[in-house]
Length: 59
Image (cartoon, rainbow, N blue to C red; front, side, top):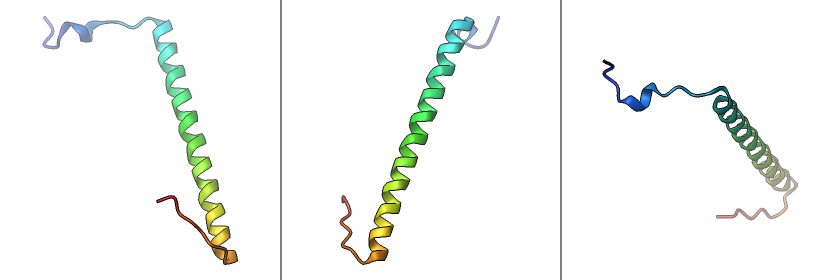
């Protein structure tokens, strides 16, 4: 008898593993896209500040 609850004995099918893999991949790609966009925005603010233009922060 296993000391763990019975839910842990559930075996995933290959199609469920594939769905989890795609979900993880899409989440990673979205995270990278957001980081790139925020980096580009931050660099544009730095460029404006270096040029001496007024920089307004969103907060």
